[in-house]
Amino acid sequence: MFYKVVLKDIVRVPPNQFGDNIETSILSQIREKYTGFTSSNLGVVIDVVRVEDFGEGIIIPGDGASYYETKFEVVALRLSLQESIVGKIRDIADFGAFITLGPIEGMIHVSQTMDDFVSFSEEKVLQGKEKGKVLKVNDVCRAKVIAISFKDVSNPKIGLTMRQPFLGTLNDVKNELVGEAAK
Image (cartoon, rainbow, N blue to C red; front, side, top):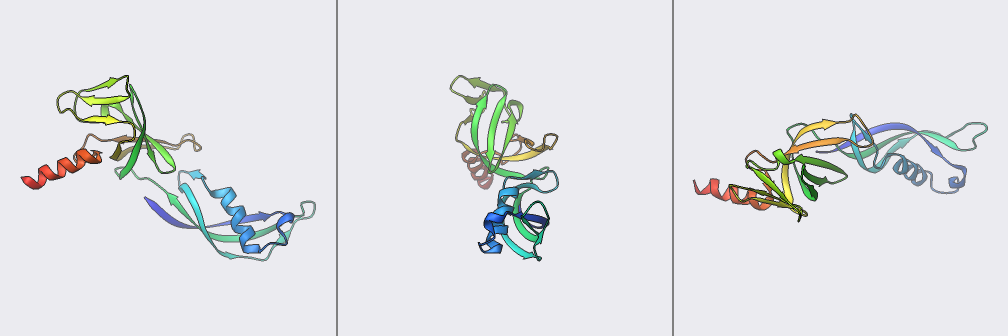
């Protein structure tokens, strides 16, 4: 889910930006530092929305830059276990599918792609044997988060499933909803 979060940090504004608008310079430095930043507490920072407040600049001898204590707002994507998300299949391998979830990527193990015996073809397609469902690159899908690991903070691992009701390609979900409504 996406969240707006207010953070505080001390921001370094280099001397070559002293003639510019100070708020614009601070925002530029914060965006450079925080956009794409990933942590287990915050998630993935999508963008810095605005600078809320900043103090008076302090120059540290020998550096020449000015430092500002700053309060700012960011938009972050922080996934939770059991959360349903929508993403696009980026690639398929014999062991599963990779799905783009905005700024990060998740993986759906082949055993979690559908509630069926699944076969992989060289055309990068996963197909269910009994139900005939198909999963291919560029399919937009609905999945549920079943595992999150920040062991490597620069590359978080997101495990997903599409085996439960109302998960899978959006077309399959639509067909399932129509079938439920007809009951």
